[in-house]
Length: 505
Image (cartoon, rainbow, N blue to C red; front, top):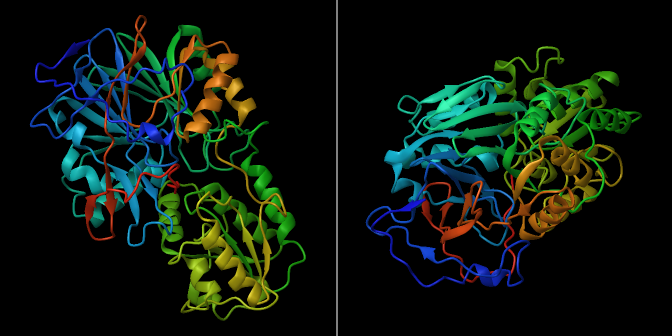
């Protein structure tokens, strides 16, 4: 590893560290110097040919805002660029994203941005940040469709290069040779990235679970994962969201069966709310509705956007046609299922408008049922409680995942993680995508699975991954940008919280 001649050392900035004063697994307690950004030119490490540098700008120590850098042989690769949504603690702020200043200072050495899947916490910042990044974007057909739509809204779709590839393809991008590996999640076309370099191979899992019947898209490519283990894997950067939850994650087929059961015998209209990006859940709702003689109407802008992308990619070819909103307004209520945005109590989402009787064409009334086919993300409890209160006041029955098996997670639980470690057998483990508590639980599990060392980074830590000398070598202060709906502004919290409440899309 070489260092730029302009590098200046600064005293460690402990503001972020004081959030979490206890030591992290496999860290020796020493703190690297903070490398200045916005310093008049690039500072900090220049990745060498005998190493891979890993720098999470978002997604480590919080849920959401996933954005990571990989450095090798003088070049940098970006993986994902997502947002995190704010709760009531930040009125007027729609979302947060990583400030790309560190990347911007070395754009001449950035070879591209690869997308693992199309969730907002992985792609939601791309259309905002692309004018500052201006590098090629590589994505699957489904993700490409959504990214291009967003770039079009910004007037950047002609200038931006979005290169579409099929999962299973191998991409050569600068000194990185990237094998794209099919996994399953709660959105079409998720993938893991086997990033091959002269210094070794690392696996960036993205978000995943093991689903034998995902309803939409391909199943996990176990042969490819086992082959990585057989070849020798240097490190795995792996999803930690459910690392503290025992057992294995259920299948989308289980959620479909739960919805069919929940629909049976209902009178009045049924409304189902979930994440719009879960196209498998969209098909499950359509099939459950057909089983009881009902038709589905999509309610909410995000639902319609995802349906458009899914139709374009052929994922809804065998699903009964959805009903138009205006047609639904005069259809008998016991023939209807509303599939709505708003599972987290979002004020402007379709379910909130229905609960407040503010929708132009549709309404809920006594005898109807609302099914929450999504878990409540921490931080959204108050907003959801308000929606529940409105619904109960209208005489609407509420069904949650605690009442019936109408939802399954998209992330691996502990048994799934252990199975993944058994397949790929990495030398080093780097938990990502979670809070510090999630990642520490993951690190302990990884060590029990036989890894040599587990490193638990926070956003801004620079990790050197190599055959010799794997360690944390530096740190940048991870700045944030806030989206107000009109502008991007620097995000400076009024005070440093003990634990931030950012949530994923």
